[in-house]
Each structure stands twice: as C-alpha cells, then as structure tokens.
Amino acid sequence: MQFRATFLVTTLILIFAVALSAPTVSLAQNVIDTTEPDATIDEPTIFLKRKVGIARFSNETQSGTTFLIDESGDRLGKQAADILSARLAETGMFQMFERLDADNVSAEQMLAGLKEDGVSIDYLIVGSVSEFGRSTESESGIFQRKKTQKAYSKVNVRLIDVATGRIIFATEGAGEALTEAKKTFGAGSSAGYDQSLTDKAISAAISQLISNLVENMTSKPWKSYILAEEDGSYIISGGAAQGLAPGLSLVVYENGRKVKNPQTGAMVSLPGKRVATVEVAMSVGEDEFNEISFVNLTTGSISKSFDNYYVSDK
Image (cartoon, rainbow, N blue to C red; front, side, top):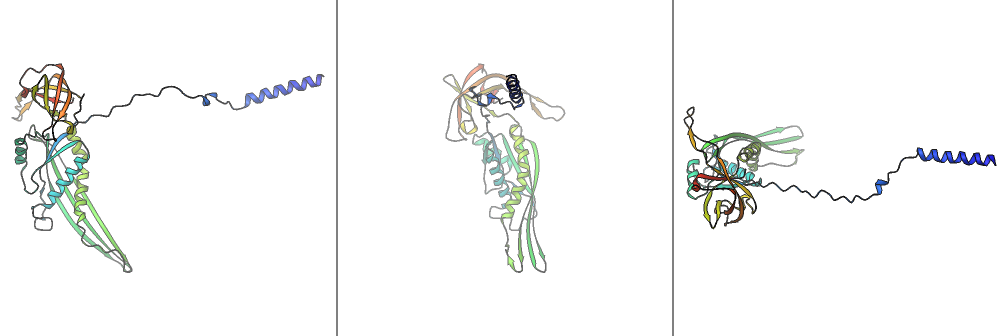
C-alpha cells in the first residue's frame, strides 16, 4: 500500500514537471481581432496645373546644310521642343501651349500672341540644341566585323517667369544613343543608316534636365485672377482642366506695391497681403483656354478693383 502511494506521488510529480517544461501555447492565437481597422484614408493631394508655353527651339549646331534641316528650316529644334512638350505633359502637372510650328518665332512674339488671345501663361520655355554629332565606327577581325553608330546631343533650356519677364532658371542636358551590328563568319545583322538615333540622343539629353525643370516650375504657388462678380459669387480664371474642383479652398491676396531696387534699378513687387478665402462652387468652359470657375467668399472681404487681387492655392 505504501509502495502504491509512493508510486502515485512520484507519477504526479513527473507529470507536473513535464507540464511546466513544455512550450507555452498562446490562446491568443485563436482569438479573432474584432477591433475596427483605422478608417482614416489620406486624401489625395490636389495639384493645380501651371500653364506653360514652349517657344520653338533653335538649332545652334554647325550642321546647317545637312540632313538635320527640313522644309520648316529646323528639324532638330522641332524634335527637341516636341519631346520636351511630351515629357512635361506626361507628368500631368502642366497645361501646355505651343505656337507656330512652321515659323521661327521669337519668345517676345510668342508672349505677345498669348496675351492677345487672353491666355495668361505662368512660364515660357525657350531653348536650343547647342551640340549634335553622329559617328560611325567599324571594327574588322579575322572572323568578326562590327559596326557602331553613335549620336550625341546637348540641349539648353531657359525658364522665363512671364509675370516679370526674367529668366529664373537655366540648365542643359547631354545625351548619347548608339546601335551595333555584328557579323561572324559572314552571318549576322547588317545596319543601315539609323535615323532614330537622332531622336534617342535628344530624348536622353532632355531626360537629364527634365526633373530640375519640373521642380523649378512647381515651386512657385499656383495663381489665378478675379474676373468679375455675379449674383454674390466671384468668377476666377481656370477650371477643371487645371485641377479646380467644387469644395476646393483658395486664398485671395491683395497685390503688394512695387518699389524700385536702387541696386539694380529694377522694379520689385512686394509680397501680397492675404485678405480673404474663397471656395470653388463650380467650373464651366469648353477647354483650358476659356475655363472659368465660380467661387464663394468664405472669410475676409474683397472691396477694391479686381485688378488689385490675385488668387492662389496657398
């Protein structure tokens, strides 16, 4: 009897010890979390598009009488301007305005034409293809022949703030493109003249400068103007094509006075004074050239002539 009792006690002690040494199983693994997930969703950032005009690029290379010139007189310049316009349009941050593809028009003439049509652009881009070259290299061996075609381009651009007429940014980009054809024991590819290398070299040059150009154009606050008042609402330039949407809040500033800088002799506009806020009610218009928006005054007051004010997004 005493032996059985001892055996029973020993068995219980062993079972208890094994239970203590066994891995702990968390019951929380089987518990279903009924906590509501965070329903807060970041609202997409509203970006109001800047209006940008591109003047036709000039061809400043020494290839004036070669294949680089066509009927319009400037094939390289046209290619550079078209590629730059496409790249800026792809960003979705700008409204692009281009003029007179067939004629070589100065930046001043283009600005005047835009103003006559009532389109107030924010920036004008002028530029040039300053360098361009092509080369063909051949290598011949006992068993193999290789032909390499290269194209090199350098593009310069200048960014003009239309409000002041001043160049606020200038940059350049360089790019290169090449293609190769090899033949071994007479077998392989043969390469004729590759015209696409011209586009690729210019595109590579523009890719090098595009990010800095975009950064400089988007650093300045978006700006619009008060056009009229109707039935208690104000009408401003711009609409859905620029990103304006019902409920969007905008700030109204009174123009700062202009003073002359004795150091440079230039007139300087002092910072504007914040006087009111408005909220977009609706936008109308057929396209970006004639879009307008109706806005309602939410705070402050607009008491002077509308020429004394401008509207901004911040």
